[in-house]
Image 1 (cartoon, rainbow, N blue to C red):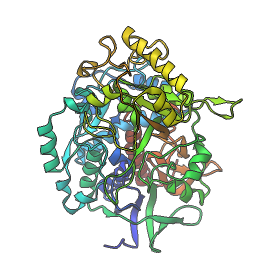
Image 2 (image 1 turned 90 degrees about the vertical axis):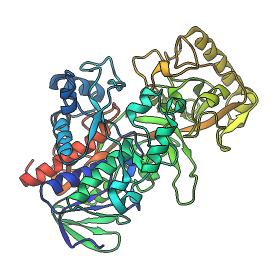
Image 3 (image 1 turned 90 degrees about the horizontal axis):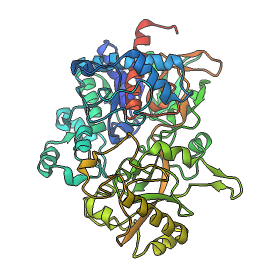
Image 4 (image 1 turned 45 degrees about the horizontal axis):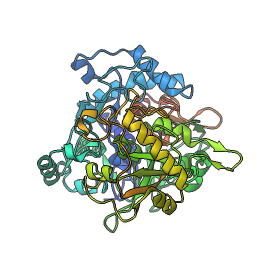
Length: 544
């Protein structure tokens, strides 16, 4: 099928922002085309945990959980750290629950994740214990018919358990706590959970409303004088957009030049599919779009690239700090063999990664290395494998810590000293250097982890050979900026005026609603919210 010459709305990208905007437009009776340059649907959303964060939401109210607009504002202002903008914060706070309920009426079914507190900043003003985090309900790809095979799926951490389920079972890598029969049943039925479930739910609702979806079709440039009136596609065609074009192609991390310019860290990698490569920024820049940069972005996680298992698959980034580091028997060190943060709390590490040694002319804590021992291997999954399975061959291993250090290029004396010091903390039950496990934050239920320190389940000795190590690289969960938009998701020009007919949602836009901080589920909820808001603006016509 070929696109028509004209639609009301043309959407670039098929993650939460793109499919959300398309669904809002289709529900409003507008003719919509979604153009995805990749061969698969879902973008980074499909590889994510799929959490959605919204205060004062309808499921929270139905469960009798208290919340207030003022509390949500206070919490987000704390998260923003002075880098958010009031109009964006208020737009998100006021419209996230509205958008969530709107999409629910369209058939996108969600459920509360009661195991999830405001877990990054639980002691912040406005924090509540439960009710702001949701996720899409599990759904089968078979409900999409032929489209089911076109939804992206992970090859390193199959999304067959929900967020609520993996938290209850002890975390993403505590696979011993999962029900093998349930997993096998879900695999046989094509059940998707987490981010993939959100994509399936949104795609199903779009297809039911006649949204035209095209894969392997990108945008070469935006067309229009004094504004945007359509797109020129990668196959040379032109499509007019009567109401507007929505850029929801993700961030710029996949373009090494743009990422180096705006992110500024050596060795940075993208946590998203290869197709997520800065398209929105390049396309909009041709029309004078402004860029907004968020300094000291804390949405940065250390991890490593996992090679594909089959031909045709892409390497995937493993968010190790919310997976492996949520369990005991591991630490992260720099090239001097020194720990530099609470490994299990990635915002702590994010700040430390930017420390620069002016005398040695290098970043103090990059490169970084994950170090673990056989106790970890015996009890937890590594890189999506089975608990007890030997790590893949690309993981460095050695019979002793000094030998491992030499293999990795780490100071042997530094590593051995750090491990001995850490093991002493484990026996004491208190990490006196970085308070690992002592924060009011968790990725796993401590009681579900049956190894490590009885006094602090986040801590476990590193003493059983063989020892393992892998170099870790930083990857943004959310880029440190993007297109500047206003509170209606309109892309702004460098002269400070909205560009007619052009909108951006998701990681294509700078996240001025939560600034330098981060909260699990907020980026996907932002994508849905501002995708919804851009359509509300289209329906009203031109204006602020």
